[in-house]
Length: 76
Length: 222
Image (cartoon, rainbow over all chains, first blue to last red; front, side, top):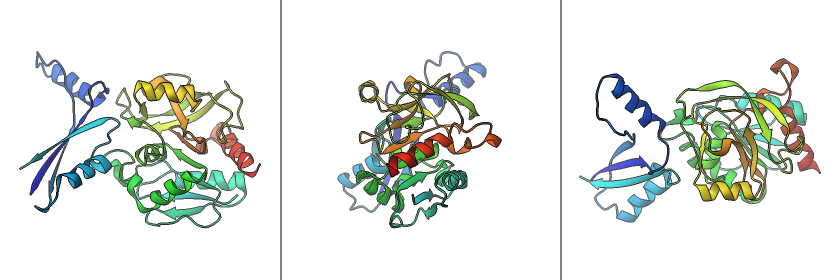
């Protein structure tokens, strides 16, 4: 089974990288970009028998830092 | 006092710490590889060094915090063993859950490498007993991810409990409330972004960092 795990900064947590990307888009002349937030996409191949609780544990214990990040799991 | 320095792949301040500890304690520390599962017997102090453990992959300090030796460090810290994390070591300690909050990319996006002024906020901890409360000291920083973040309630709690050990005396990295170093609730774990081990003798431009190790040695012996 393929998993796609999206790790994003929580709302309200300052994202200097998103700000820099936003600024660069402005420098390239793209108008109308109101905000940019950068995150991570982690793709994994796991055994079909992997249950939701284990996937959740992987996200909480390592893949995301839940002090600053949220995560969302997509099963392909 | 017998001390130990943890070494991860990508640590680069481990030898600086070893020199500082040898100068202050009179004995070279034991260098402990990340794959070990136990600390050597009779260790009175553990230092987690700066650097770029595991290439900063995933998040700074994230992989190192899950290494076998860190399980032992967390366990011993729970029993009161003094643990210092400097720079990447601070990131490792937050990722390992020994200290609250997280260290994020510097607000200005630049790697900051220079001397900074610090205010000693709490001189009552085992790590800061060599300083006077409110004293300004100069210690170098060298980091890309030193922007301390915690939610407002956590920050208020840390301030209320006197757990902010050092605060920047100038803008450095966007750190919440200027926090440069903080201790855990029990006071035996300190994480800080500035490098006290790089300021231990006149040739370094001063010895403000040396007093941290001297104060700790005295506090542990006393």
